[in-house]
Image 1 (cartoon, rainbow, N blue to C red):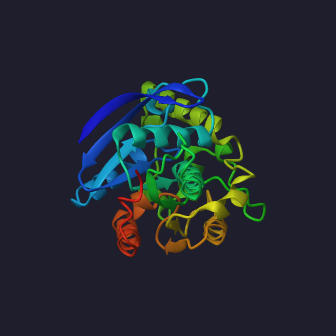
Image 2 (image 1 turned 90 degrees about the vertical axis):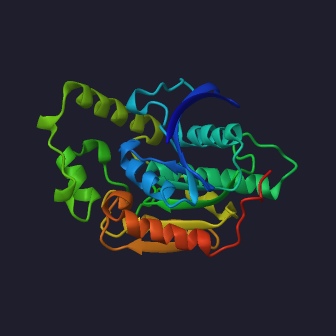
Length: 283
């Protein structure tokens, strides 16, 4: 595994430095973390890359873990543009984008943008550039669902976050008293960055209506015990995206990649193996 930083030139955003790990070989996978930061997907990325079938690119969202965040990078859509440019810069095609929480929201925006390019291939788009062939939305944030709103995350204590995030909260509970001053500062900075990207509601009222344009294979995976982003959001995503598959992982909450990594990996492998290889569909 290697760790690199590339400064990308992104239309409308300017120069954006992105740090990412690159591990394994095979079909490209872009793995996008949620508010828990890159550590929340690191182990799952290792699991995928160790299979020998996937090259896993795992970026750090600008502003997380002390990574610089240029002033124009202030939304989920801007992150989608950054990662489309990263795929282009790396020369990758046919990528499967897997995202958890806000990472799933970014993946949904990439799928919308990709489908716009697919429908109009004459138009070059720096946002999609026909690099993405499928998406996996894992307990994705982003939808405004009045019947089951996103929890008021920024009002929660760490204990409350654990209680609402996991099927088995005690296995993942953190004790702030054990944190160093540096870790406390990093967590506070990550939390502030999350608020910049997602706002207090962690939703975009326009997203649900745009999902019907998605034309690439899509999988919605949800931990049934998630009380951060309730199961109703999974059902809304699956209904809105044409042809989307929906899979529920019973003994997991908001972060299935931590509670049930092997089951999540198996669900994804079944999804990617059940359709024709689209790795040469982009150019």
